[in-house]
Image (cartoon, rainbow, N blue to C red; front, top):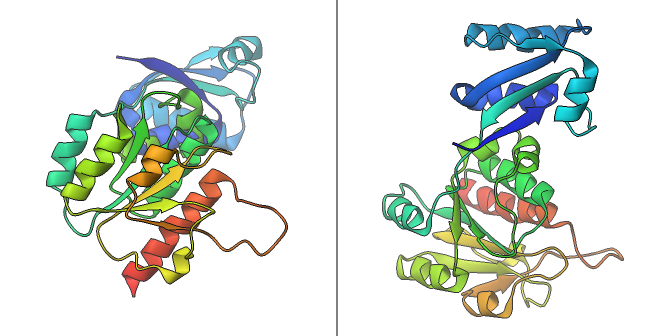
Length: 246
């Protein structure tokens, strides 16, 4: 069991909402009495967890100097699932599949934000690469605000092989690339779909792009060349949701 510490009212509330059984311990600032902190303490007590009252210096150390808002908890980290877990899940998916694939994404803030959007858009699984990429970390969990618990994350060693297998299962592979000839708004996203987004500043690797059935881009009307990875991912996924809702 891999344990880590989360801090801040928002992160603690997400853990209470989505994974209360994985909370192991808690520490709170003995000097603070604000309403949101007291509510979190009450919620922890209802789970049978009596937070240890301590001083700010200890909490600062746990949070590595970041803003903890008077509370730190120790939780069991969400597990990263394997390629075999992915195959089992895909074979039993209900409804029209919608998967998110992240190719060598290294920023935990981006992964956390993508997980949060994936949860909001009904994505049935997020596939990440094992090498040269971030996995599930405390930062990912904090940014994801509970979505690291609700969205399955599959870590694979050979992304090209995984994409080929997904195509064999009848899932279309759509890659995001600035060089694409068509925009996402000109593309049918109602079929079984895996949306593939490349790494920060690099985009899709050549072998990954070669496995895509088609590429799409986002129209860029201003001066900047591209959007933040997690923002672009949100646009792509919500366009799929919009089309599937019609």
